[in-house]
Amino acid sequence: MVKRLISADTSEILKMSRQELKKSIQASEGRVVLSENVAGRESFIGDITNAEIAKAFGADLILLNGVDVFEPTIFGLDVDSENVVNRLHELVGCPIGVNLEPVDLNMAMLEERLAIPLGRQANQETFERINQLNFDFVCLTGNPGTGVSNRSIIQAIKLAKQYFDGLIIAGKMHGAGSDEAVVDLASVTAFIDAGADVILVPAVGTVPGFDMEDLKAVVRLAHQENVLVMSTIGTSQESSAIATIQNIALQNKIAGVDIQHIGDAGYGGVAPVENIYEMSKVLRGMRHTVSRMARSIKR
Image 1 (cartoon, rainbow, N blue to C red):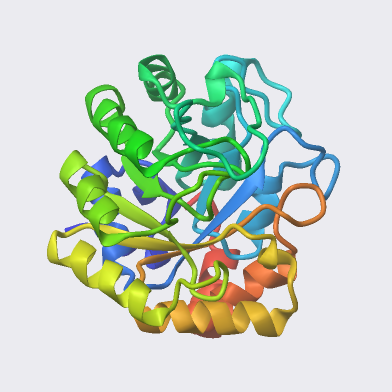
Image 2: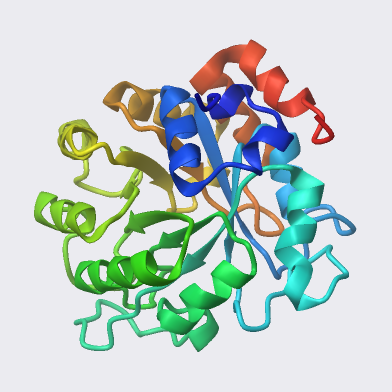
C-alpha cells in the first residue's frame, strides 16, 4: 500500500512508479502543492536552485519551466546536462517534472506567436529524452504566446503514453495566445481518453469566466474516470497579496482538486516564498506544513 505524499519520506517517494505517485497524490486528499520555477534564470538566492527554495517552503512537487531538454541547464547546478535531474533529486528529495509545449502552428492567434526551441516542444524525441533524464512527470501546457491548442495537447498525450514512463499532466493554465476556450468539457474528455493522469485547469480566480461551477464539473468528470485534477496559478497572481493566495487555495480545495500549482512569476523565476508557505498552510494546516518543510531528505 502506497503512503500518501504529504507523509512520505524521500526514500519512499523517489522509488514510486507512475501509478504509485498518482495514488500517493490521490491519498493526500487535496493537500499537495506543486511549485513551478524557471530553471535557467538566476535564482532568487543566487547560489542555490529555485527548486531547493520552493521545497524548503512547502512544495511537494517541482515543475521546471523553460528547459531545452536536449541541452538542459538549471541555475545553481554545476553538473553536466546528463545528470541535472539526478542531482536535483539528491538536493530536493521530491518528484521533478518539466513543461513540454504542444505547439499548434495552425492555431489562430490572439497575439504574436513566440517561437521556442524544439527541445521545449512536445514531440517523440523530447519525450524519449525526458525519460532518459529521469523526470518523474511531464506537464503538457503552454507558456504565453506559444500557440498551444487543446487539439495539439491531445496528440501530445498520445505520444507521451508511448514514449514516456512518468505521470502525464495536461491542459491549459490560460489561453497561451490561442483563440479558443481555455477549458471545455469536450477537451477534458478527450484528454482523459488519450491517457492523461492529471487534468490541468486554471485555478478559480485566475482566468476570466472560469468559475467554481466550471471547475466542479471538470473535477466530477475526471474523478469518475480515476483521473486527478490540478488547479494552476499561471497568471502572475502567484505574486499577489497573501490574502489572494489564501482565497484561491481554499476555493479550489472546496472544488475538489488534488494538486494546487503556484506559478513562477516571482523574483528570480519562483513564486514569493511566503506565498508558497501560505498555500501550504491553507491546504493542510501548520502540522503538515512543518512536516513537509522539516522532514530531512536523508530519511
